[in-house]
Length: 318
Image (cartoon, rainbow, N blue to C red; front, top):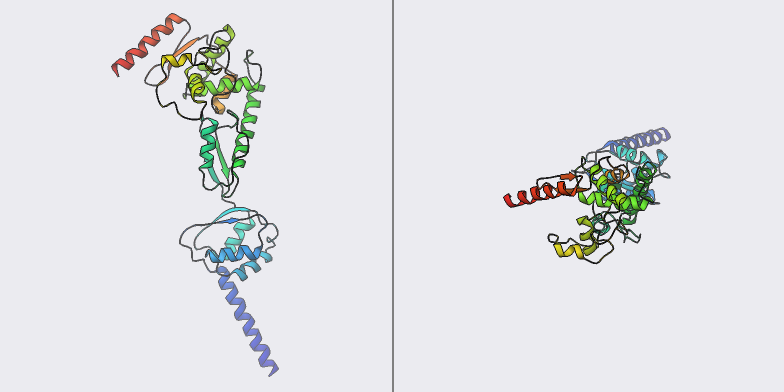
């Protein structure tokens, strides 16, 4: 009788083990990728239950045993995980063991004002919390940033500000512009260049125009500063700039004031910053739009007036 009971117990153990092995290697019931956010400090029991309810695994009990057996229960990395369909429990456990956190991306565009950037970050549904950091104009580098679902909106602002400080410091350390007194002036100049042209091949020449004007004590007379003077970067002007706008009373208006504006007029990209730090050697003092893309540059007022006539002729024939 004892031998029979031992045999029966052995058969039972083998059956249970076989069933466990089968369930561990059995694919889940998902038909598409499933995202699960693993909170910091979450227990294996809670995680296992959430995974089973989401149909990522077939048994929370077995999954806890697998996770603890692999020794990863105490070093789970928080973040969002994307679990594939037809994956078995061992594969799911390996994803967690390897910390395969799924990172999302958000792109802040070159030339956006801080108001535009903050609005865009606030509209991202996978970020949480209010932005409490002072995001001054020009303090955030336009770039693509990675984040995990549930990260704070402040974390994106911090990434962008840290990146801007790094690029700005590097550009300032290697700048060739004697007329600029500090990094902030470099940033202000870069923000104007960013707004004046989006063509890579023009940036250094545009930078040269403004640096040459600063060196000669001439007003910069750049339209984007007038637009910023009127809107303060909080909205679109919504119309073309008028002649009377050039008389708008503001320290940002470079038609009325000498030198640089008191602060940046947007968040410039790194290429505009490097162009501001290293303008071309051309002795241009003027430029005007061609009308079909790009600008015509001039060294003298007479040459510039001819270019303006060409632009007006283009507009008339358009």
